[in-house]
Image 1 (cartoon, rainbow, N blue to C red):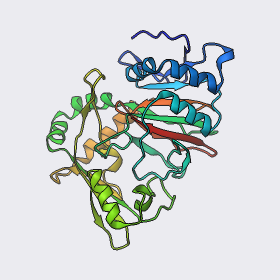
Image 2: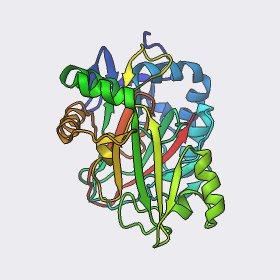
Image 3: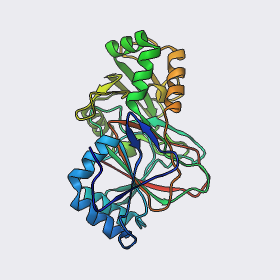
Length: 321
């Protein structure tokens, strides 16, 4: 699809890559100096909803840069302009509600690297889009790198065809342990009471079951969640039939509070996991945040993460269907 829209002009950013003929991220800037306000961006998005969705699916990542989006309220106006259904985040990341559809991104210590993942990949229903807004860019580090998921599948099939076939056939099983209360001491320190919105165990059990999870209660009041079987890869409509590496094997494998195996209990080769980790990093794309940036990611097509950062850094987020 050719780029034609009078309300945006194409820009460039450091770290951009062309992947299979698609520019990632596609940078969209104001068409002229007089149209840099957040209100102008909102009006442009409302006028071009269908066009923008097609561009997002084609390029997987779109960076709106040069618009004066200044705070959570204006970011929420941008979210409303897209017209996408809001989805509530469920998962281990500590987050705080800011305003209407807007939340903080993972509040784990900035010194930690948040590993690449498809948002809410563990669950049977996943948001289609992740939208991030940079209110305060970090002085150093803190990028939000992302990875074209199909490239990981391609490379894994080339190097480990038998291992991929076995994991595809047997599918995957994950476990994760959460405390009862959130502590904010790490990127995965969210307590189950906060994650599932209730301190009541029976209600928490109902809510986890609705998400396709089994649980075990631990003596210390914590919860062990068991998820599976889950697929290794998935193919989504409108994305050229690409097989996305739609799993979190590398992120959960062999950790103190999580695990990843095949669904029948078969262990996954450490060599395979380590090599996959290298491939994901090699395929990563990253740029430096600027104040006011709005990054829209196709969650069906991209894994994303967070580089360690010096403070301050304030990035807000929303997830949508």
